[in-house]
Image 1 (cartoon, rainbow, N blue to C red):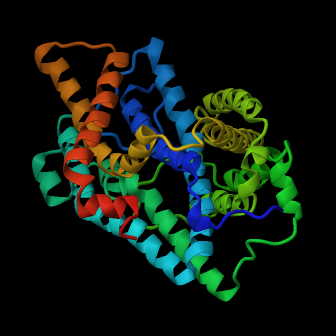
Image 2: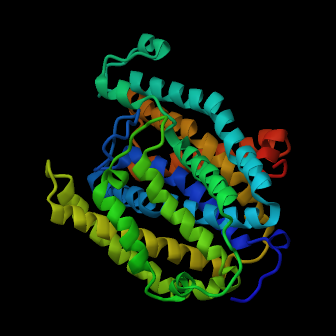
Length: 398
């Protein structure tokens, strides 16, 4: 394997931009929830659904498409940068960097963002026709509705930061016991990454996990404690990103076939959609149906991850001030967006009920998405970017 420049002297602009896009797409995903025909089981949403049947399946497609690969992509990129940090700073500094860059924003968001999210949820549930929720219940944190009480308390959209922090602490512990050889002779795993057929064995690994626990894809649980199977699933992508770092000098070669991967990912996603239409209408899915779901989801995830990564390496692999600014803002955008999304959706529902303002779901979606992105970018530029919070989020204090 060819040697590369020292990690501390290299900035991977494409990977930075892709990580930012993976976060920003979370806003798109959440903005689509209220307009879905087939919402995710277990995902408690505070606004009553308002799908238009001619457009509802479009929002289902947006949600499930992004849900299938966005977080796996994020963990793969996180693994890539984790090894870069370990190589350039050492394990002790790596751990402190991760605690500052992930742990501190997570703790701060639990203290500030999560209560705002809870209040927006409570406000929406109070005005929902599906649940019997009062301000007294919201204030006392007790709910008569079992579905609400079982799903309203947890990390909400912050869960992936907890998972990432746990994985990084585990990596630190393992590195202390037995450091990984970053450089060295080519290995069969290096040759696997350079092979065009690599999505197949990679999907085989994650497909086994999904077959055992299909709910990792099909359901959402709002919890405080990480799920062991979920940790294992995302660790596979994290480790794949770690190994990809060995080939950092051959990233374009490792992602050749980008456009083929993206095209095949859409074929695989069509398979996911077909399987899900059968999976959700039976009480106890057969082993064959579970296998079809696990295989199609796993293959779709890897094809999409590799396709998106290759696309960004070819399009965004140089410094662009606007892209860099958006990359810096993306962390804040994701942390702060959920209360804005929910309040905008509540406002649109109220406008329809109180004043008869009827907008097509596509128009509502555009308002929610645009409003949330504008609001978070505005607050980032005016309240966050030039403060200690912005420094924590961009890593300049880490």
